[in-house]
Image (cartoon, one colour):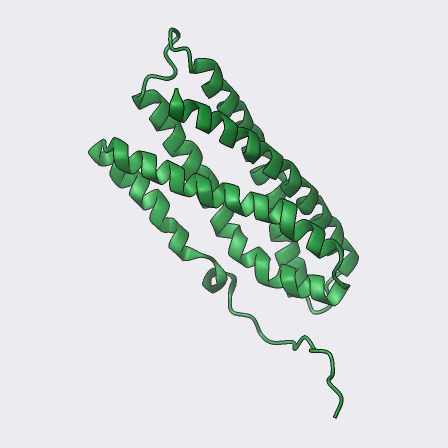
Length: 193
């Protein structure tokens, strides 16, 4: 009896809403509680946790998954993208927005934006990187992920188009990963002040 290659079975996938990573909504909820109670500890925790999840995902997608995807055969790539895209549609925007919003409140509460504060240029660098990450994420990555998801739902998806969108996303994920390393350096500097 010969071993055969595993075959991708066409199965009906659960709805997009059922596939999203809903647990990530705990972070913005915790941030709202932190803001309502003016809890610096909880706000800092929310910022660090959502930042770690956002950064970790960007680094994983850009530097680990990107090179792996380039070596997969088209049916394997389709299987990975079909599984991955719905799970990142909520996860990445929520972690990005929560990290950025909590960070903004933190620098205000801690007085880092005051003109006399020597850490203000570092905060400016973090804001610049965050702006670039946000523009790329919401302007290119998220729309491409939605296009990919919709195309994959068609009876005969255009594999070439999906690969072009995904290739753009993988390249930008690498850029995002590099920017995330930069923002980590800035955060480390701000932490030791």
